[in-house]
Length: 360
Figure (cartoon, rainbow, N blue to C red):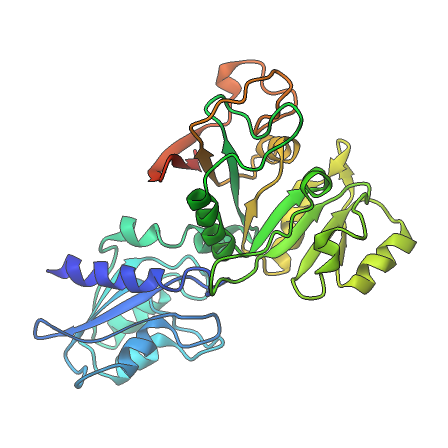
């Protein structure tokens, strides 16, 4: 029975996907005498946390009740008051916690405060399932760098474009619509200048009710055209361009268009990606959907900056030794030097297949 309540809390938490960054997704269910008397979730960053939303929805007094919450209740003042305070005030008898909060401001302190107030606390209940909700938050809060997910669509023979460079479309419409849910879920979306020059993309979220990600372009030598869609819409969609060039006249033009410029030094002929990740983390970007081409994917893999991969596999074969592949560069010399991933999930989307992997 207890699993049912935590499963409901997880279900509630997931409703906020894409809206809570850089905060975690959290759900809470309050149960008294075998009956749910309140439930809620953290709906948006800066708004009430899950526990307070659940308490606000009570159908009767919570005195003596149990609250199931997917993440340890906070105990510090931030944009909202501590949830531990509200739990104590409402005289709940028991708190069942899924994930532990690695945030140094919480990290066990919330559970300790509740215990000192005479409340029974159970930790690590369905922890694996609860942890699975917030890999982005856990990564960002502990490393201060964005969680990076590499995404690409390829044919059965591993091609992301034909020998002429044509790539529209590899997957079907349903799979392409699914990509929009990822653009909504991740704070930033990143491409290299090669993708901008080849495709002139918008990189916005076309899901109804979705949030546009912050657009980030890696452009070492400042080759971005002033008339491309990204520059022309930078005043309405937050756009960051990382470059190693100090070409003042063009930089001033880009800034006037609304583009934010990050001056990042070169490393091995391209932007220092480690420094870029550090800088983006400092700007509050907790996650990035990497939609670049083979060269950018190769650079991220070589620097070990990928945490997850979304691979859309289409039932097509392009062939051609000159056709582009998802990862370029010179590659590894031996199989044991490969970047290794663990299969997390397989999903069929009409005729296409989505493979989700996490880095080992």
